[in-house]
Image 1 (cartoon, rainbow, N blue to C red):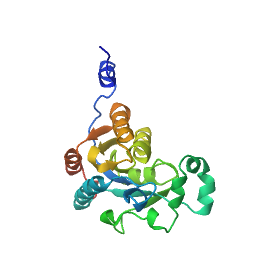
Image 2: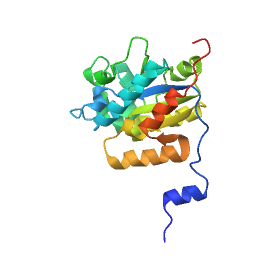
Image 3: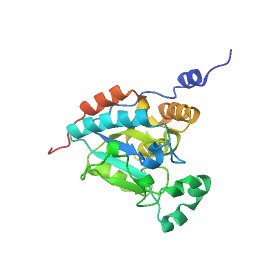
Length: 215
């Protein structure tokens, strides 16, 4: 009888539970129309994930926890910098600065005090001020939602770990174009980089968080 990947990982103590997060930020990764609109070449079936993210956003706003959005957008000059990425995924070039495809979905419309960080590559940390924002807010972890699970979400979770932050991913608040990479990315995140939880559990993590000193 063959050993499944899950059994093998359990036997080798891969995928253990991390410590709890005391003060999380909600990080909404690339829920722009380029990824939430099925008419886009990059589009996902993201309806449920957007709705679950909106619920978590309501909780974070109610508790005045840090919230931050990322989006991919390119100018002509940026396309030269990101050329290797665009060679792999030419459809990303439609996310032009100022275009509808680079706008955050109106169902999650950022408020004036919620940063929207532009990026050229997959990770929400690479080439942005996300790490500085989290440090300034006194965070020790992140709740990550968005698209795509196997691309920018996974890359952001990996970099969160590498910046010293624990990451939680609500499984129904992330979306991908196909079921197989979505499932594989969630398995990979749970095994090596963060915790995959229900949206309800993510809400409880937000509600149990500590306020920043002075708030």
